[in-house]
Length: 177
Image 1 (cartoon, rainbow, N blue to C red):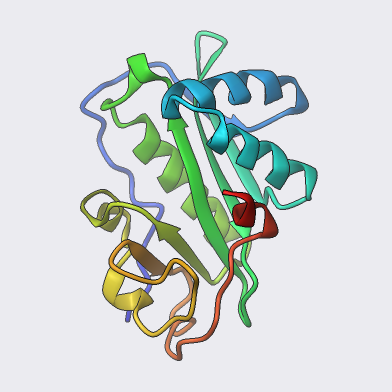
Image 2 (cartoon, one colour):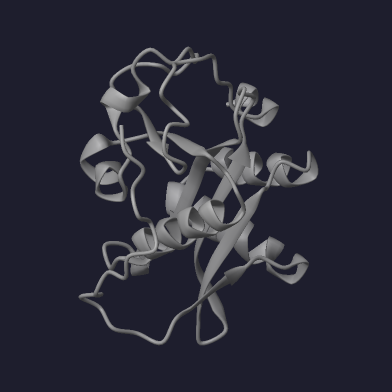
């Protein structure tokens, strides 16, 4: 397994004036509304709120365009013998989906995770989407997790960090889903 260079610029097919930055307390209501709209239900918005309240929002970034929050991504610490993050959720306003905003948020979050010394990241999702960021179902094989299976993926942020499989658990807020 090799670590992936995360900070590689990717040309956007949709050039726009968009700012990606850390969330602030002033963004909380907009993130909640955005997440509910993106998923069409309140569960993921409740997850974000609980993660934040529990102190488990290690990296929380927003995409802002013309002063409006149009995207959000959150990474939370996982229980593991190394410094590992779980990616979830990533939300983009329905009218802005399929334009690369989620991908830019994920790449920026992974780049920040590397700079902050996180060693790995895990995600539960569609391999067709998340493999573009370096996540791999094969890399996650052998790791013990309640979500282990064909949609559970891992990404090494530090070379050798995932050499030996171990048990890994998402933050307690995920137990409420």
